[in-house]
Image (cartoon, rainbow, N blue to C red; front, side, top):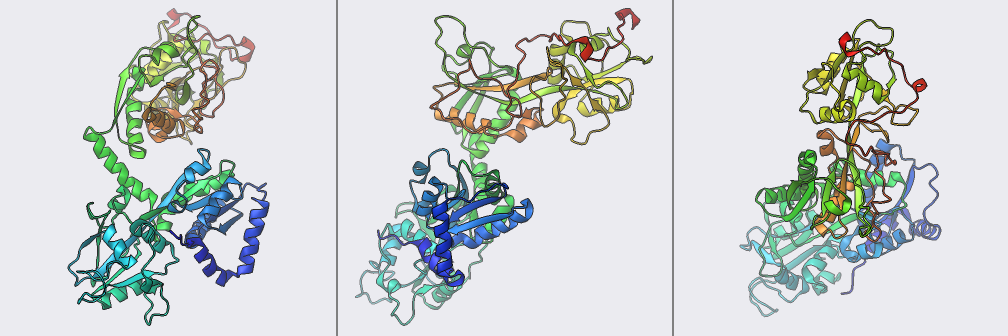
Length: 626
């Protein structure tokens, strides 16, 4: 096939406005010098097809308004050169028509992230008075190649009128999409390519093609089909079948999303791994809800809308019992949140049948034995220490943390406590605040609450606790403490509002440390003593589905759902290459900021060894004082 240079065609048209010499100079400078310096972090470079330059410039304009971008450059280039430019880091973002570079993923490799922008769809129409309602791509291709010249016969000797062919300008992207998907590399018929004819059959607008088909009963035309296009009733949009044996379908959001409509192509952003953060933010904006509304107005079927439909289809398949089986084992307390994020995985990725089975904790080798591919733990798991145990190399990720915050009335002078002091308060050994005659009022979550169990495990332990006034949830505990100047309570950190000022969060000293840590709903500081991680372990011999599930969660998938279940999500991490998995003997747990933590290996109450000089001394009383 003699490939039409789609982007070269548009470069010529753009040059009439911009000036060819200026455009060539700018492109040469960019290619020669690479990406300019971006010391201010507000500058990035995009290369992409000229056929969508107006769309991208509109996206850039809207993004600059919202994100205070100082300067961006959009360089028009053929998709082949865009890929080359990405590899040489001559641009930060590349926009590629996928069919023009079929091996783009192999050329760029896994380090270049792909962000589909949307699809271009081509519709085919005939005069509404014709009885034909559908056609296969084989026959349609032969018509536009000139092999079939009448609707009921072949060749020029037929007594019926010849089919009149209409198309967009053959150098346009939509013509290339039609030629690739329908004609299989064949040339267009001579009558379309011949400019010497009295009525040139290439049209520069959809209205021109539709108008020509309306006037001629034997006409057929193809054009870019936009999402909100209203088709004139005097023409009929044809259902298209792949080949001749497939089911003919009309171009709709559903058929384009499912890939059953055959005359489409996709535009995809590729992000250089060393691109500045502002470039990533732009790509997210362009493929997000605001970007989808913009590209829809320029004739693209936004990937965001197409993926919503695919998501609904996958969920229906899951409900019907379809999908690849995925079994995850782990602690019983993680069953609900893992089941919920499995639904998120189906929405975003692929259909699975999820099965969560509670299992006992143990060493890494033990929990990932007997064919187990994924294991969920509420603490970092140890490596086997037996001499004959081979150190299996697994991948692990702290998905989230759940933590207890201790709160007091804002008027209380207490700013920090040791865990020992906190235990003595809730055990009834300390009954008054320093220099206060009123007794401390204890508030907390109901005993069935998961965080109440965590608090009792980390703080109270086997010690007999004083009377705690239990409340149904964090909000009720906050209300109680806010109304009681002598009150102290424990709550779920994840449910503390960003502007909460009715109570004060007390800092706690980690074991052996001299500085208190204060948690918030956005982060749990490394080493915070009343926290519990949610860890996910992936077996080295996990199948593709298990790997995809691990990657989805490790890179930020399901974060909103995790937060809804009372956890604070950890910072997403880039997918590690499976050629160099992490050895659990050297891997550390990470907190929500990705910093190294010092997890407490004990399942019982912690023992605090902070020097008395570094904590506030409380008045000790015996239990009988209560």
